[in-house]
Image 1 (cartoon, helix red, strand yellow):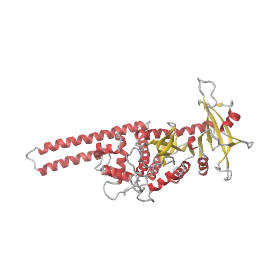
Image 2: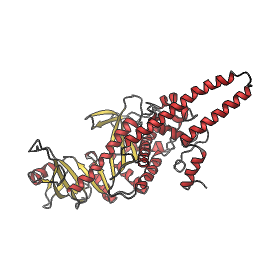
Image 3: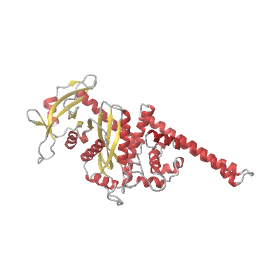
Image 4: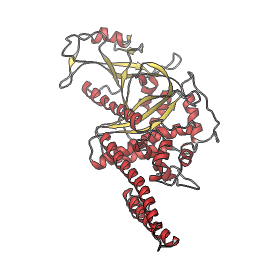
Length: 454
C-alpha cells in the first residue's frame, strides 16, 4: 500500500521503515519523537531523528490516500454489517505557539470558549461492531489565523493544495469532499450522522445528492419548517403548537418522543430557487424518575431525511455517532494527535493521518486477538514493545561486557575477537528480527499470501 500511495525514498533508510517507526513511537510512551529517538530508536532501527522528520515534512506524500486504503481493508474484514453510516465531527487541539503556522481561533464546544489551536474534521465509518476513521482535514478559520513561516517548495504539491483548502473552504464543503472521496474509494454507507454543529442546509443537500439518509441532531435555531397547511414555524414554535403535552413513551427505552413530518427549503438565499424536501423531525426528552415534569427546555431535536424510519430506530442509529467521540479521546491521550514537534505544515497533515492509521491498526489487532476493547489491545501492544525495547538496551549492556571479556583473553588475536563478536551479534539480531516478524522468511510468506510476491 505504501508503494501504491507513492511512499518512496531514493537513498537512506526505506520509506516503509520510517513509516513503521513513526507508527511505533507513541506506544513506547515517549512524549515526543525527539525523546523516542534519544531513548529507544536504536532498539528498532539504525535510522536517525532527521530521517523521521524529513519524511514527516515532505510535501508530496499522500497520507490521506494511505489512511483511506487502510480503512477500506479493515472494513472489508468485518463482512456485511446491518447498519453502515458515515460520521463526521471536529476536534480542537489547543496550540499556543506564536510562530506555529496554520493556527487560528476556534470555538471549543468542550470548554465553551474560543481557543487558539488547530481544528481537525474527521470522517469515519460506523457499523454495529466498530468505528473506523476514514479521512481528516484541518480547518483554518479567518479569526487570528497565523501565516506560514516558510514557503512551500512546490505550490502544486499535495500539502500546498491542502493548505489552500484549509484556508479557503468552509466546513460543509470539506465534509462533502470527504464523503465523495470515501464513496469513490468504494466504501459504502446508508446513513450520515452528525451533531448540531454540522446540521446545515448544505450538509442536508449533500446527503440527498449521495442517497444517504441523514440523521442529524438539530439546533433550536430560527430555521423554518413548512407544515401541511403551508404555514412555516421554527423548532420552538413547533414544540409549543404540535409537541407539548403529546409525548409518547418508547418501549424499552428511557425516552419520550413525538415526531412530525414537515418540509424544509434547502435554498440558502432568497435568490436561489426554492427546493422543499420532506423530512421527519423527532422531538425527544429523557424520562427522569426523580423529576415527574420535564422543563420547557428539556428536549432535543433530531432530523431524518427518511420519513419512514421509526423514532426508536432514528435514536438507535444516531447513537453510533458516539464511536467518533471515543476515537478523539483515544487519539488525544494515546495516539500522538498533533504531538510531533515540527512547525512544517506537512508534519501537521502527516500527524492527523498517522493518528488514524494507528487507530486502524489497533482495531485490526483487536479483531485478530478477539479483545473486547481497543484499550486492552493498546496496553498489550505497549507492554510488548516496551519489553522488547528493554531487552535491546539490556543486550547493549551485555554486548559491552562480553566484548571486554573476550578482549581480555590473551590467546585470542584481535581478528578472532571481532569474528566472535560479529557471530554473537548476528545471532541476537536474528532473534530480534524473528520477534518483530521482520525476518526474510516471514516477510516473503506474507507477500505470497497477499499475492504481492511471485
